[in-house]
Amino acid sequence: MKIRHLWIFGTILLLTSCSAKLTSSLLKTYPPLHYKEEVKVFSINESVPPNAEKLGTVKIGDSGFSTNCNYSTVIDMAKIEARKVGGNALKITQHKQPDFLSTCHRISAIVFRIDSIENYIAKPEAVDSSMLAKNYAVINVYRPSGAGFLVGYNLNLGDSVICRVKDDFCQSIKIYKDGYNTLWAKTEAKVEIPIKIEFGRTYYVRCGIDMGAFVGRPSLELVDSSTGKAEFTSMEKRKQKNN
Image (cartoon, rainbow, N blue to C red; front, side, top):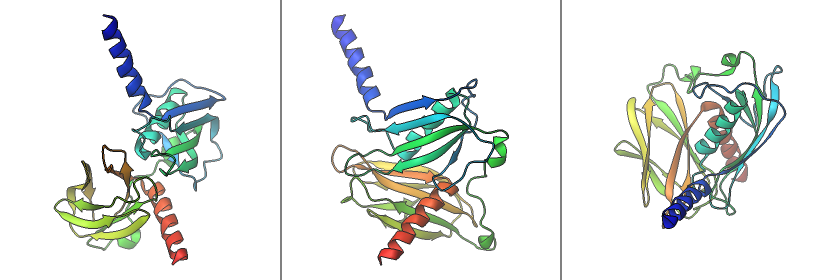
């Protein structure tokens, strides 16, 4: 019985240590929000509305053993924390990409409560008016410099390779086939995400490398237009400046 208890304790410790580390500081709380209620994320370059009420701050970092800490995961952790205190918006104040010190995305954010938040939640992947008559969509693929910088991989859309993803990489790709499809990549493991391609739309895919047994495995994230545009444009401008 004692061995069984030790095994259970060890398993719990291992699972919790794999998660990113979350700390928060609260100024005010409201009744918790339902888990299905949307939490608006304002990127570093976006301003929050003047009626936003600050409830506190949240910080998500590397526990030292974290493995499940890609961007989507840490944002979801921050959203859960915001809902607990009645917050319906997050303003990202700092975002550290995976690097030589950590394989995790690390963020700091302010938790806000905003009246009529639905007015600030934009439809994802909005149609670009300049592309209304186009018979293609655009996928902007980018990979910030960080962990696994020596490892590259092919990014596939269905049966076709659309680009070779390397460290510190960004590229715009026109897609002439619409409908439901799958983006995927493979190194020591295969990772895939579903995507619905619609002509006239622009999509942003953030790539990276997550920790694996040998060379690491690809990470693929379909990012919202606001965040993706800011990150992709920033990489483009930096590369153009360095060329």
